[in-house]
Structure formats: C-alpha cells, structure tokens
Image (cartoon, rainbow, N blue to C red; front, top):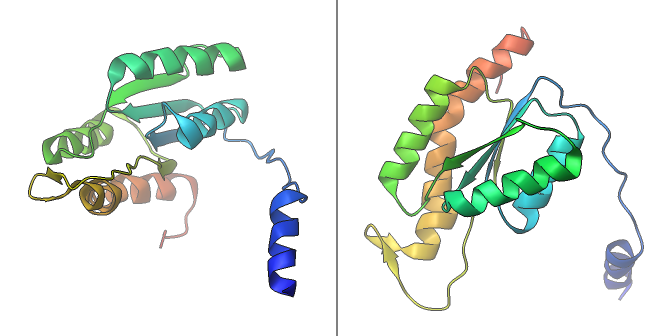
Length: 162
C-alpha cells in the first residue's frame, strides 16, 4: 500500500518547479499545438523567450486563432508561424519536413505532441488510423527531421549529437 500512497501524494500535493531556462534564439517545432498540452507547451515556450515557434496543425484556420492567443497572452508578435501538418497523410509529412529543412535555419527542439484516440476502426493509407498517426507517422516525422536536428545541434556545440 505504501507505493500507492506515495504515488497519490506525488500526484496531488507535489508541485514541480517552474522552469525558468531561457530558450532565446531557439526554434521550436510543436505538432498538435492548437489544443491541450501542445497549446500550453507553445505558450510556455513563448514565455521562455523562444525565438520562433512553429505551430504544426491539421487545421490552419484554427492554428491562426491559437497563434493570436499565444502572441497576445505573451505580448510578443511575429513569434509563431502556423504550418499545415496532417499526420494521417504521408505527403503532408514529407512536404512539412522538406519545408522545415529548407525554410528554417535550425530546429532546436521538436515536440511531437499530435495524436488521436478513436473508438472505431478506421484506416489511414492502409493502416489502422490510431497506429498510423500516434506511432508510424510520428516516428516518420522524427526521422525526416533528424538530420536538421543534428545539423542544428552542431551549430551550438562542438560535441557530436547522439
């Protein structure tokens, strides 16, 4: 019973330290950043002085509204860019990764937050939709952006990234 009590105590009464590290001059890419944890993460990175935040969303119109909310709540303009990314579409992921590789001078942080939960069986390009979006395509996006992440890491540190 002791581990359960310790777990409950840590979940209910322990408040984690508020991060204060600066993200100045850093570019952050967040998938699924127009709702929930992704949206709050984007706001938090804005408060920590990120240079640029790429809001990668399926619905650009909704992303634009959230961009305004983030910039208004942090009193920073021209901070966020809204890019379309549909993890159910292989072509969307390829074009997003290509755009990031060509338009962004660097990517310092990639937060792959997008995901879905469905209660019915659907397919997306030949695979079950939940597995496609939450696992296969999330992994694919990370692999496609890995070379840009490694390149960015060597710009700020002489150590080879792992």
